[in-house]
Every structure is written in structure tokens, then in C-alpha cells.
Image (cartoon, rainbow, N blue to C red):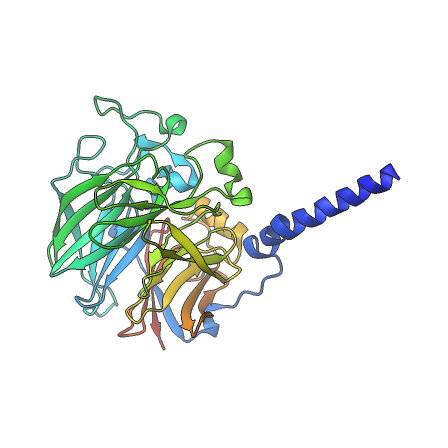
Length: 396
């Protein structure tokens, strides 16, 4: 009888493990048995834009009115050495000069389809090492009159009082949110303020609210250690709220599984994608500056940054083959990864998820981390945290 009870308890435990953990990992995260389509099945002509300035552009932001795309680019070799989210913490191998914000004029491609571009130089800023270098990851922007305010996740390395690099693999980086302002059309942006908080320990992307307030994802529960490695299974990331004065607090109460690049939708809601379970969680910000979960959108594919377009639709890239995705992230110069691009559209009280384009073999679209949709032309601009190119898809 005792043996029967033990077996029954074990079976129940295994069933619970499968239902709540293994099932999601097998079918959603790793995509076992998932059908992935070839890029030729979709009504787009896609190409790669290769330029030294356009390497490892993790995040993009589109100024629809001025017809300018902004890309936060770090350089592939730099990102392979210095990327907090992926545990790459060799600060001494950072690219000299750090990351760059590159502006592309999207209505003026030349005969080869290359867009005029310029690098936006930071001014009035002193980085961790005493120079003007910044280490960009995700970012957001807000237009105030004819000025753009950029909110950057800045993966600053840890330094001592003499600005000598410390071993970040032992103590972790010392990330901040840095705010710059720029007149439209300028090639310089002026540093306005730095936000540092113990409540923002692993920032991934910012979503600007109003009056200088913002929310930001902590994509892991801690900077370093075994607990961080367990986050994809048991969860641990969250979303923090930071006031205009720079005071920050945890704004979500549930453990999230690798919450990635969040955004504020045109409807004022906050959308938080997961790079593990393939869900986009929808939050409403209340007067107490806490986020209430009001809906969950299921794509069943691990996701990266979610971004709104000019009409309010949301666009998000996914990794339909997680194993190949991780292999391409580890070796982006030699390996490719399948990519899926989703459009999420409000449909009454619910959401409609459409697969817009997919590249089973990674022929053109590979390790895509951000997609920006130009509602005027239907063109898609796609960035990658590691690949040495941007990608562009024109509707046929």
C-alpha cells in the first residue's frame, strides 16, 4: 500500500512537472515538431545591408515623421565579448569607442538600395572608463516638439575609483539608463542625465512613459551565478518603474521568464515579450506605479523586442528553432538561425497574431532581435544583436 502511494505521488509529480514546466520547454521554447516555412512563401523581397557601422544593431527605433531609422549598433566582436544578458562579461574586449547610434534616411536609398547614414555623436557624457564611450543595448525615444529624447540601456562595465576596469565576470556590470536629447536632423546628441538604481540590475530595454518616467525590463533575477542560469526554467526577471526623478522600484510581482524588449503601445498599455515561453504579457500602469497583468498574448515561439508601428500594430521577431538560434548567437559569423516575424493586432477585446514572414533556413533573416514596420511603405527593417548587417524586407 505504501509502495502504491509512493508510485501515485511520483506519477502525479511527474505529470505536474510536465504540465507546468517540461511541456512549455519542449513545445514552445525548443519548438519540437514545429513547422517552419521558407522565406519564398511570403510576399516580401528581403536583403541584407552590410556595413561596418551596421554590425550588431540590437535595437531600432523609427521616426515616422522625419523618415529616419535609428539603430543602436555595437559591433559583432564587441557583442560577443560584452553582453550581460548572454553572460559575456569580458569588458577589456569592448570595441574601442564603444557603441554607435546610426541614423538612416529611409526615403533616399541609392541605386543599390543602400540608405544614406550618419553616426550620432554623444556630447557632454563621460563613461565608466573616463571617455565618451557607451555600450548600447535596447532603447526607446520620445519626440518633444522638434527634439528627440533617447533613453538608452547602457551596459557600463564596473570600474574602481580610478576608472580602472574591474572583473565583471565576478561582480557583474554596472548598467545605467542614460538619456540624451537631439534636434531632429542633427549629428550630435547631448547627455541629459544618468539613472542608476539597485532595482535595475539587468536592464534590457526601456519604454518611455511621460515627464521623464519609464519602465524597464530586468531580463534576469540576478547579475551572475547559478540562480541566473535557472531563470529560464523557474523564472526570475521583472519590470521596474523609474520616476522622473530617477527613483525606481519593482513594478511586477510575478516571476517572468527572460522578459525581453518591452514597449508602450499606442493604447498606453505595456507589452512585455518572453524569450522563453513565447508570451507577450499586457500590463496596465496604475496610479501607485505598479503594473497589473490584464491580458496575455500567446505566440508559442520565444520572442525578442516588441515594437509598435504608426498605426498601433505590434511587431515582434521570434526564434522558431531555439537550438539553432543559440548556436547562431554563439557563432554569428558562421551559423544562421530560422526567424519568424509576427504582427499582433487588436481585434475587439482580444488580439490577433499573424505570421508575416518566416525564414526557415536563415537565408536572409537570421538572429533577428528587432523589427520596425514602416506603415507608409510596408517595408520592414530588422536588426540583430550579433549579425554584421541590418536586414530589409520590401513588400512585393
